Length: 571
Image (cartoon, rainbow, N blue to C red; front, side):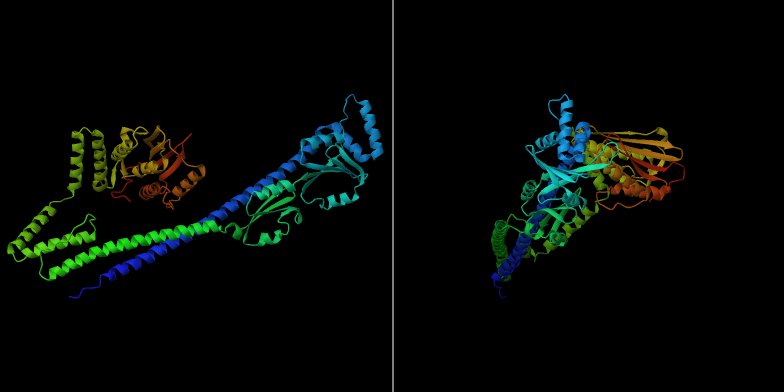
């Protein structure tokens, strides 16, 4: 018999497992690269949302400031009247009016239009200027901080800009507030508030690594844009850009993110992932080489021993390791085979084998369906003898439930159903000792009422999966039976997590329509019991849910209480 080259199996295993290791490592490297890029892109989008939100808050704050100043003017009749006179009169006539008014008043400070302006500049540092434009005289007065005033300007051009909504300025947030007569509500002029915005918006934009921003007045008047040469209209349509748009009055805020740039993996991170992948691949190949050599070495030892057996040497024995794998089993069987071959010629050996086989068959035939019950009963008695009555009670409850599942008829009495429910609850009371208790009550006259088996246990199981709060110490489940007219009501009430109103309404709708649970975590047991109740008793019966205040849920099961309503064999 020609021996195969001992390296063939090693090379085959080494090549196969090396390809597998390289494939797995390559897949992991691709996964981590893709995952990292997606995470960077998601971070960039979240950052863009934050930036656009901060820019919106900035614009809304400025708009609220302008609205507040406008309202404050109307809260001061003296200042409002002074401003209306300023709009009606020329500069010299207004000076004469304000002088006479100051002389007639008892106040040390003349609280007129320019007093109001100075207070506004002091209160809001971002307010750069206030323009007063008269509709009657068409004069413009420009007021700036530190009591700087430029009166008597021609306001015709400014009025045209205001009417055409072209009054915005680059880097500024401008708001126009009209001033009207209190009695006639006729417009006398307007106030134009100009706030600094470029520095604030630039600061917000710089907080994002790849964010671009554009702020527009109306539809196409750009007041702020970074970078300045960007085409915001093209970026809105470009599928490679993620656009976050927000509106603040007449201003539109656009924040842009180039997804290609945001998801670009930094070279240090990319090289680190490749380095880790290469290291993992090398380690994997090292272990493949080590394992292949160990495995083929054991196989070679088996082949060598088999070759010796072919020469007639039945004394050869293989060393059995501690791995207890298939090769150790082969070695063990090989050693046994060699020993049996030495006794093969003895007829008594064959007879002994047949006798032992007969004994094994006889022992096997003694096993019957009562083996599991008897074994559990023996364990229970042993636990009681050892003083562990709780384990004995748990085993008893489990035996009762197991027997009821296999032996009881499909239709049982309500008393039996409640007993099974109690056994099930006792098992969980042992499991959640100190944090859970249960109460089961039912009028005695209802205990003999027939009902289909196991309608309460799935509801209990649903509570222990979805409702119980293990960190609490006062978890409580109450089971109560009640008969109203020709309907039997079973209430399962708990004080657990409860259910959101929307989800509760959706659940009751599915139960009314007898729909199947669509998700694994969607109370499959309750849906199944609901279908069984409707199938046996009719469509008007089944299950519905009620919320418990302040927390908890009540599962209400309804069935027919009329005699003969339950068939001999349920669904």
